[in-house]
Length: 183
Image 1: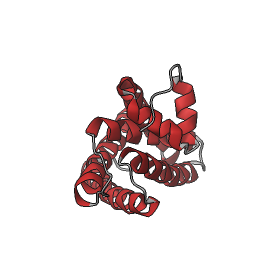
Image 2 (image 1 turned 60 degrees about the vertical axis):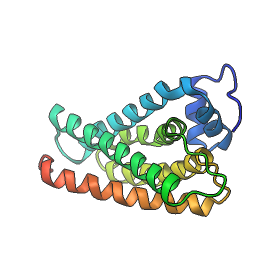
Image 3 (image 1 turned 120 degrees about the horizontal axis):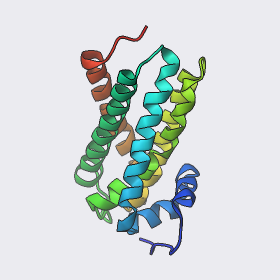
Protein backbone atom coordinates (compact mmCIF):
# COMPACT_ATOMS: atom_id res chain seq x y z
CA UNK A 1 0.00 0.00 0.00
CA UNK A 2 1.49 3.33 -1.06
CA UNK A 3 1.53 6.33 1.24
CA UNK A 4 -0.85 9.09 0.23
CA UNK A 5 0.65 11.80 -1.90
CA UNK A 6 0.34 15.07 -0.04
CA UNK A 7 -1.53 17.71 -1.97
CA UNK A 8 -3.16 15.54 -4.64
CA UNK A 9 -6.32 17.36 -5.52
CA UNK A 10 -9.73 15.87 -6.08
CA UNK A 11 -9.73 16.66 -9.84
CA UNK A 12 -6.32 14.98 -10.23
CA UNK A 13 -7.62 11.93 -8.40
CA UNK A 14 -10.66 11.86 -10.69
CA UNK A 15 -8.45 11.97 -13.77
CA UNK A 16 -6.23 9.23 -12.35
CA UNK A 17 -9.27 7.05 -11.65
CA UNK A 18 -10.60 7.63 -15.17
CA UNK A 19 -7.16 6.82 -16.63
CA UNK A 20 -6.99 3.50 -14.73
CA UNK A 21 -3.88 4.65 -12.83
CA UNK A 22 -3.07 2.04 -10.15
CA UNK A 23 -1.12 4.63 -8.15
CA UNK A 24 -4.25 6.78 -7.86
CA UNK A 25 -6.21 3.83 -6.51
CA UNK A 26 -3.39 3.01 -4.06
CA UNK A 27 -3.37 6.64 -2.91
CA UNK A 28 -7.13 6.73 -2.38
CA UNK A 29 -6.99 3.36 -0.62
CA UNK A 30 -4.42 4.66 1.86
CA UNK A 31 -6.08 8.04 2.51
CA UNK A 32 -9.04 7.83 4.94
CA UNK A 33 -9.76 11.51 4.26
CA UNK A 34 -10.69 10.52 0.69
CA UNK A 35 -13.87 8.79 1.88
CA UNK A 36 -15.97 11.91 1.37
CA UNK A 37 -14.48 12.42 -2.09
CA UNK A 38 -15.28 8.82 -3.02
CA UNK A 39 -18.89 9.24 -1.90
CA UNK A 40 -19.14 12.47 -3.89
CA UNK A 41 -17.99 10.58 -7.00
CA UNK A 42 -20.69 7.96 -6.41
CA UNK A 43 -23.39 10.59 -5.94
CA UNK A 44 -22.29 12.54 -9.04
CA UNK A 45 -22.19 9.32 -11.05
CA UNK A 46 -25.72 8.48 -9.90
CA UNK A 47 -26.97 11.96 -10.77
CA UNK A 48 -25.31 11.62 -14.18
CA UNK A 49 -27.36 8.47 -14.74
CA UNK A 50 -30.59 10.15 -13.68
CA UNK A 51 -30.08 13.19 -15.88
CA UNK A 52 -28.63 11.22 -18.79
CA UNK A 53 -31.60 8.85 -18.84
CA UNK A 54 -33.79 11.79 -19.85
CA UNK A 55 -32.47 11.20 -23.37
CA UNK A 56 -34.73 8.14 -23.57
CA UNK A 57 -37.95 9.93 -22.76
CA UNK A 58 -39.53 13.19 -21.76
CA UNK A 59 -38.69 12.58 -18.13
CA UNK A 60 -39.51 14.53 -15.06
CA UNK A 61 -37.83 15.40 -11.80
CA UNK A 62 -39.45 12.27 -10.40
CA UNK A 63 -37.75 10.08 -13.01
CA UNK A 64 -34.38 11.79 -12.43
CA UNK A 65 -34.69 11.13 -8.70
CA UNK A 66 -35.80 7.53 -9.27
CA UNK A 67 -33.05 6.66 -11.75
CA UNK A 68 -30.41 8.45 -9.67
CA UNK A 69 -31.56 6.53 -6.60
CA UNK A 70 -31.58 3.28 -8.53
CA UNK A 71 -28.04 3.96 -9.74
CA UNK A 72 -26.94 4.69 -6.16
CA UNK A 73 -28.57 1.50 -4.86
CA UNK A 74 -27.01 -0.48 -7.71
CA UNK A 75 -23.58 0.88 -6.82
CA UNK A 76 -24.12 -0.02 -3.15
CA UNK A 77 -25.22 -3.54 -4.08
CA UNK A 78 -22.21 -3.91 -6.38
CA UNK A 79 -19.86 -2.68 -3.65
CA UNK A 80 -21.26 -4.99 -0.96
CA UNK A 81 -21.35 -8.02 -3.24
CA UNK A 82 -17.84 -7.28 -4.49
CA UNK A 83 -16.52 -7.03 -0.93
CA UNK A 84 -18.13 -10.33 0.04
CA UNK A 85 -16.90 -12.14 -3.07
CA UNK A 86 -13.45 -10.55 -3.19
CA UNK A 87 -12.56 -10.56 0.50
CA UNK A 88 -14.48 -13.57 1.79
CA UNK A 89 -15.01 -16.03 -1.06
CA UNK A 90 -12.04 -15.42 -3.38
CA UNK A 91 -9.20 -13.83 -1.41
CA UNK A 92 -5.59 -14.37 -2.38
CA UNK A 93 -3.10 -15.23 0.37
CA UNK A 94 -1.95 -11.58 0.49
CA UNK A 95 -5.45 -10.09 0.50
CA UNK A 96 -5.95 -7.49 3.19
CA UNK A 97 -9.62 -6.55 3.25
CA UNK A 98 -10.55 -3.30 4.93
CA UNK A 99 -14.07 -2.11 4.10
CA UNK A 100 -13.06 1.58 4.10
CA UNK A 101 -10.18 1.03 1.71
CA UNK A 102 -12.32 -0.97 -0.68
CA UNK A 103 -15.22 1.50 -0.55
CA UNK A 104 -12.89 4.43 -1.31
CA UNK A 105 -11.34 2.72 -4.32
CA UNK A 106 -14.68 1.43 -5.57
CA UNK A 107 -16.17 4.90 -5.09
CA UNK A 108 -13.54 6.44 -7.34
CA UNK A 109 -14.00 3.64 -9.86
CA UNK A 110 -17.49 4.99 -10.54
CA UNK A 111 -15.97 8.19 -11.98
CA UNK A 112 -16.78 7.23 -15.60
CA UNK A 113 -20.44 7.09 -14.60
CA UNK A 114 -20.48 10.86 -14.29
CA UNK A 115 -20.23 10.95 -18.08
CA UNK A 116 -23.66 9.33 -18.36
CA UNK A 117 -25.01 12.86 -18.16
CA UNK A 118 -24.23 13.10 -21.89
CA UNK A 119 -27.04 10.60 -22.42
CA UNK A 120 -29.41 13.56 -22.20
CA UNK A 121 -28.53 14.27 -25.84
CA UNK A 122 -31.15 12.47 -27.95
CA UNK A 123 -29.59 9.51 -29.70
CA UNK A 124 -26.58 9.47 -27.35
CA UNK A 125 -28.24 7.83 -24.35
CA UNK A 126 -27.61 4.19 -25.15
CA UNK A 127 -24.02 4.72 -26.36
CA UNK A 128 -23.24 6.91 -23.32
CA UNK A 129 -24.59 4.32 -20.92
CA UNK A 130 -22.95 1.38 -22.74
CA UNK A 131 -19.51 2.99 -22.90
CA UNK A 132 -19.59 4.15 -19.29
CA UNK A 133 -20.82 0.76 -18.04
CA UNK A 134 -17.86 -1.02 -19.62
CA UNK A 135 -15.47 1.73 -18.49
CA UNK A 136 -16.79 1.48 -14.92
CA UNK A 137 -16.33 -2.29 -14.98
CA UNK A 138 -12.70 -1.86 -16.05
CA UNK A 139 -12.02 0.84 -13.43
CA UNK A 140 -13.64 -1.41 -10.83
CA UNK A 141 -11.22 -4.20 -11.75
CA UNK A 142 -8.25 -1.89 -11.14
CA UNK A 143 -9.78 -0.63 -7.88
CA UNK A 144 -10.47 -4.14 -6.57
CA UNK A 145 -7.05 -5.42 -7.61
CA UNK A 146 -5.37 -2.58 -5.73
CA UNK A 147 -7.63 -2.52 -2.65
CA UNK A 148 -7.59 -6.29 -2.11
CA UNK A 149 -3.88 -6.56 -2.93
CA UNK A 150 -4.49 -9.11 -5.65
CA UNK A 151 -1.53 -10.25 -7.69
CA UNK A 152 -3.89 -11.66 -10.30
CA UNK A 153 -5.87 -9.30 -12.50
CA UNK A 154 -7.89 -12.31 -13.65
CA UNK A 155 -9.15 -12.80 -10.09
CA UNK A 156 -10.16 -9.14 -9.90
CA UNK A 157 -11.97 -9.49 -13.25
CA UNK A 158 -13.88 -12.55 -11.98
CA UNK A 159 -14.86 -10.82 -8.72
CA UNK A 160 -16.00 -7.66 -10.50
CA UNK A 161 -17.86 -9.39 -13.31
CA UNK A 162 -19.77 -11.60 -10.89
CA UNK A 163 -20.55 -8.64 -8.62
CA UNK A 164 -21.58 -6.52 -11.62
CA UNK A 165 -23.93 -9.21 -12.95
CA UNK A 166 -25.60 -9.56 -9.57
CA UNK A 167 -25.92 -5.78 -9.13
CA UNK A 168 -27.39 -5.35 -12.64
CA UNK A 169 -29.88 -8.10 -11.87
CA UNK A 170 -30.92 -6.33 -8.68
CA UNK A 171 -31.23 -2.99 -10.52
CA UNK A 172 -33.33 -4.48 -13.33
CA UNK A 173 -35.62 -6.23 -10.87
CA UNK A 174 -36.11 -3.03 -8.85
CA UNK A 175 -36.65 -1.02 -12.01
CA UNK A 176 -39.27 -3.42 -13.33
CA UNK A 177 -41.14 -3.51 -10.05
CA UNK A 178 -40.92 0.13 -8.93
CA UNK A 179 -39.82 2.12 -11.97
CA UNK A 180 -41.71 4.63 -14.03
CA UNK A 181 -42.89 3.62 -17.48
CA UNK A 182 -40.50 4.60 -20.27
CA UNK A 183 -42.30 5.81 -23.34
